[in-house]
Image 1: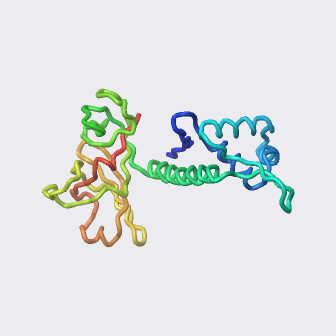
Image 2: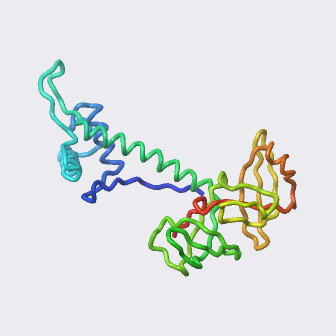
Image 3: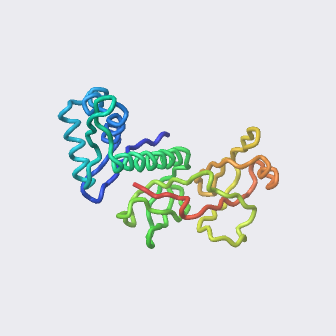
Length: 230
């Protein structure tokens, strides 16, 4: 499974800046020309100007300015605001891709929302287990069918459910498979109801817990580690 998506920034509720518009600004800065920037992405000069004017309008201050004179005879460059917008977008874009990568690697479970409290919900999985998770869609309602994404890196294995912890989710499981690879060991778990979880732990941790096929072990993870969405 691979999850992909596009990032859009809402600017003060007045409009959006997405990949295409940010790329245009970057090319204006690189080429010193709106015309050259437009040509490099096969956009008409008018469309490029329209996009820049729209960005200026929704941002509330000019993002592009003309410079005259100088050794090269002047040209077009970005203002401080334009450079800051690019920096902000690229930073958020990297975080966005990291987030999507996390979802791609995550355990994906199906289920139905049973109840909601504040920003988290209790979901009954298709196999009948109950998981508390964080809702990414704030308008979700009880009874809706959803997907739950659980980051394998956030799952902790413990040999007892008597451990005092702030984590809301503690699932009793049995080890199905153990796949050691150098310093890391992949562990496949299954609850009595049939819910399957995968995670990787260090080989040292695996040996410390005495992990072996068929053993009973508890999977522990926080509400924030289980992301719920449509």
